[in-house]
Amino acid sequence: MSRPRATCAALVAAAAALALAAVARAAEYPAPVAGDCVLRDFHFRSGAVLPELRMHYLTLGTPRRDAGGGVRNAVLILHGTTGSSAQFLQPIFAGELFGKGQPLDATRYYVVIPDNLGHGRSSKPSDGLRARFPEYGYLDMVEAQYRLLTEGLHVNHLRLVMGTSMGGMHTWLWGELHPQFMDALMPLASLPAQISGRNRVWRRVIVDAIRGCPDWDDGNYRTQPAGLRVAAEMLYLVSSNSVLRMREAPTLAQTDELLDRYVAHAMTTLDANDVLYAVAASRDYDPGPELGKIAAPLLAVNSADDLINPPELGVLERQIKRVKRGQAVVIPAGEQTVGHGSHTKATLWKQYLVRLLRESDRD
Image 1 (tube, rainbow, N blue to C red):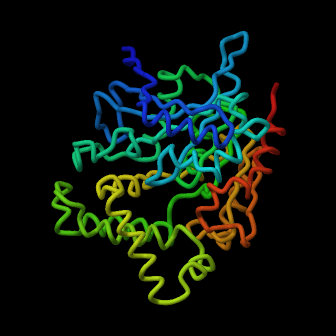
Image 2: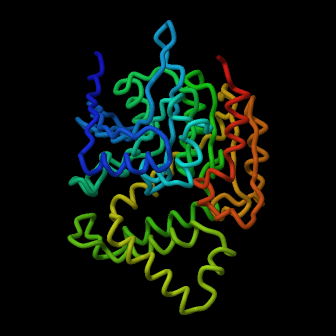
Image 3: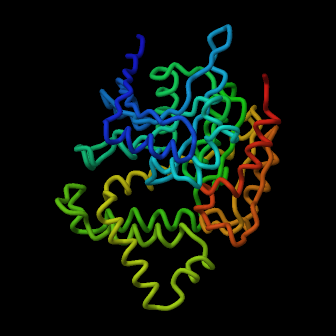
């Protein structure tokens, strides 16, 4: 029995198109095109099924095919937990990568940036199903990305898979699940190992805070439950480095003011069920046993001040030895690094991207 095909359409609202175009002009790269792809009859690893799963995405540039119909210039970029494709249009990322002559020049490459399952404008609990939305894991998310590319956008090969944080973890999984699909892999701010230790603890704190809060009401709350405040505080805690946080708020009063402002913003922009699902999704992430399956050149980049992936654990250094064509770089902490968020500050690591593209060039 054949799987129902995906239905995709580039639907850019006038206001959104103007905003995206303005960003593009400022950065001197082609305007992003927004679209939605409906994946029909989506089966989750849990056994649950959604008749329709919507995947929202941005593309920059146009696909280039070889004589056999294979796409040769597609790049997949994957965002982190609670993020969306929009974060990659920031000047610190897009302005360093997508312009003419830059590493991912959008006049040469076909860049695909999805809103991951459960995030952004893709299907997620807050759309209406709330806690009845199927529980998803990282393997489900990668499957949705694969179907978006192959069924929706008719991309049958990737020049590069690159992701930040959760997207970095997805990048490791891409190398294992579809080892011949890409020419190169670049996971940023991630480790190729099961979530454990402090990394598991902060995620459990968020999950328990939301689920254990009486006003969560089994996911049927009318206003955001108090547990979302704890989740926001925890996200604030792990997202930067201690030096930067002290510089930003050197007194007790300033720290409280900064944290209160961050939480207040999160309470109006995040949804508790969406956060709960997104953080819990890491439960099935365990790339360690299959690292030997990765065939494409892989260059992993972390920063030394990343509280979520601390270099002192030595995980990256040990595990990269099991990747046939793997390399790893840990950027030293310094004035320009910003902890875990260094993954979106492309000036810190784009030279390594250039090296990877050069070393993996098959043209």
